[in-house]
Amino acid sequence: MLFNTLPFLILLVVTFGMYYTPGLSKWQLAVLVAASFFFYAYSYPAFLALLIISAAINSYASYKVFFGGENKRKFYVTSGVIANLGLLIFFKYSPFISRMAFDPHGDIGSFLLSIPLPIGISFFTFHGISLLVDVYQKRDLEIYGQVIEKNFWKHALKTSLYIAFFPQLVAGPITKSYAFMPQITQKYFKDIQWESAFKNLVLGYFMKMVIADNIKDQTFWISYPFFQAYSTPTLLAMIYGYSMQIFADFAGYSMIAMGLAELFGYNLPVNFKFPYISRTFSEFWNRWHVSLSHWLREYLYFPLGGNRKGNLRTYLNLMIVMFLGGLWHGAAWSFAVWGTFHGVALAIERFLGKYIKPRETVIVKGLQMFVVFVFVTFAWLIFKLPNFSDAVLYIKAIFHNTHSGQTNFGIIFYIILYSIPVVLFHLFYLVETNIEKAIGFLKPVFYGLLLFAVIVNSGRTGAFIYFQF
Image 1 (cartoon, rainbow, N blue to C red):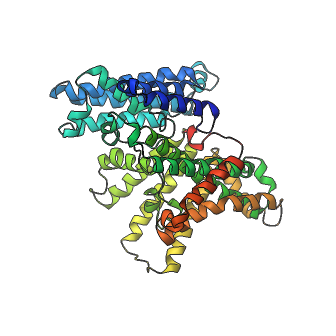
Image 2 (tube, rainbow, N blue to C red):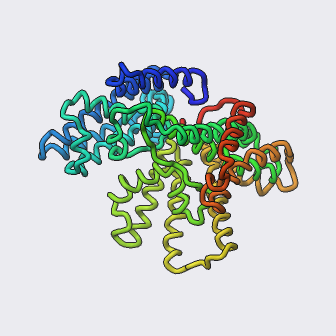
Image 3 (cartoon, rainbow, N blue to C red):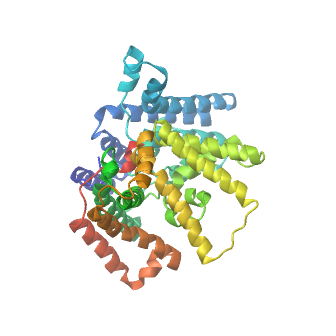
């Protein structure tokens, strides 16, 4: 179910009404869990069983980690993490394993290739792992004495909400259990953060429906073999446009998720912090998909040793984390290559940073931003063209089609037009540090114009890009 469809609007209105009906207040948690399960099952009913199984595994394992006795804690947390990873590997990576290890026409190979990819599995399995590890490591914190209910069924209901909360279920932001679970309390209509929710929803829908959905009609031609017919300027414009599109699409989703959560009294973490003004690759990953970056750092990079075991080990840890982060995005070697690109960039940057201290001038800062943006933008080709050979052909076409191919001024014009809000969005942050400060008393007019644009100038409805992960 997409956030920008009528069925979702109906579900939202019905859930919101039931959630805040005075006579049903004691059932708030159950209402949200039921709505989240319905949201997930709407398009793919069979996958609901997997979501319920995930919630059951993590409910039982986390409960036993907390109450099961000191000598069994490690067993339950290990078993729970393995179960989560097992579900993720089986459903997401079976076709990948089949292509590498089995005959695709054989019984095993054809079976593995036939396994469907449940939407959002990468996100809700990470939630399950977060809960188990947090309960295991932070068991003595007072917060967990309040979060883990002694009544197992109450704990299971809370865990189900954490795993399945519909605003973040299929594309994040990824929340850590110690940040989300304490928020599961009685909510009141009078406490809704209306202004913040409205701003997040309007800006999020504008990013998705006006910017991303309009640009996607232009970046469609990046697909193989269509791109081979276009000239270098058009090819460059399209890959630039895709960089704008993927930001607007995913940042838009995250803002919508934040706004929806606020309507029900929950706060989700900010997932994007103006990533295209980053001057370094480490800064980029502190600004892009922040919740994933923090998750990988806390639950993978630090356990591997982080930067505490010498320079070589630090570089290796960076490579491992980004390699696995690439595979998390997609079950293909192309995504592993994408992650490795970023891992290499982070390692080189860390190494050079020990010896080179660039001057803090406007020109140098601008050049740094340009280099990082160009690298990141070309790396996005893997997302649009998961077949690595197609991405290589696209790069070759950029160099070979300088004097051949069609220059489509329509594509270039619309990409520039719909990119302007994204550019201004980042420039406001650079100049004024805050878009609210930049528009001042014109805030109502600004958000009114965005809402008007959503109504009259939305592109054709399309799924969110990160739904595939």
